Image (cartoon, rainbow, N blue to C red; front, side, top):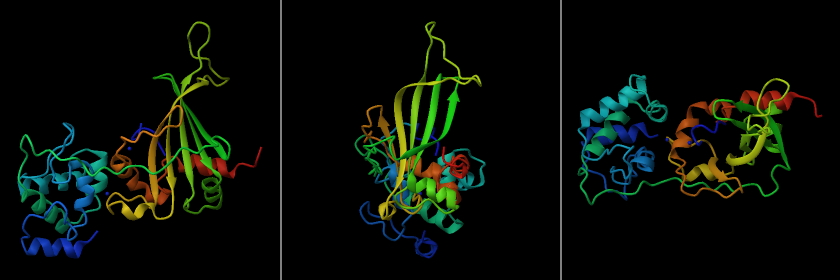
Amino acid sequence: MTARPLIVHGGLALATALLLCEAPAFAADDHSGLPQIAACQACHGREGISESAEIPNLAGQKKDYLVKQLEAFRSGLRKNDLMAAIAGQLGDAEIRALALAWSSLPGASAASAGQALAIRSRMTFPASFPNGFTLYESVAEPEDGRVTRRYANAAALRAARDGTPLPAGAAIIVANHAAQLDAAQRPTLDAEGRPLAGKVLSYAGMEARAGWGADVPALLRNGDWDYALFSDAGIRRDSLNQAACLACHKPIAADSYVFTVKALKAAAARPPA
């Protein structure tokens, strides 16, 4: 797992049927015929009208324009890691069906901005942390004077040692520290010249629980993983929309959606101290 994105996506026959029938505009509360819509709504709004200046509206856009943008994200011609992860899962018929659906809706007006169907985290900060967790990676970030430490619980470490996918019950916690400072307010370095960890600034986490993926749109689903951000006191930031985290981790399904799985496996292979 990496803290950077947090610092945070099916149905070809149905999509083709919609396309061939030139389906009318879908109702905001009835998009069962096009399951990919739910992933779009997580960021772009229930009716394709975003409340964020950084996220474009989809409703009312020209169909051909939307097709070209999704194709560009899929091919890499247009660069955006999150959209590339989503578009990379879509076939031609699905792209055209989505473009048709969104283009059929009314465009934005001053009163029409709708709230995104944000995906909220269910993960809670482990009360006993760091007990029950093993530090498997510590990385110095000299450019911003921070130290990042990554911990895995027993379930995650055991799976990494066995070479099996991380199971339900696995959890990883990322602790973001300020660097220790000496009397002159300079980072205190270890024997290898890396800043030593000082006070905790914040935490990030990911946890898998059986059934958690069931309510996440298929294009965003990371198995049963949830992602969360926490304060230095372990209080979850409930404003986080997991959609960006899920999209970012989606392409690494083969690594159990964990960016640092190589370091985790290396730590798991070491004999106990």
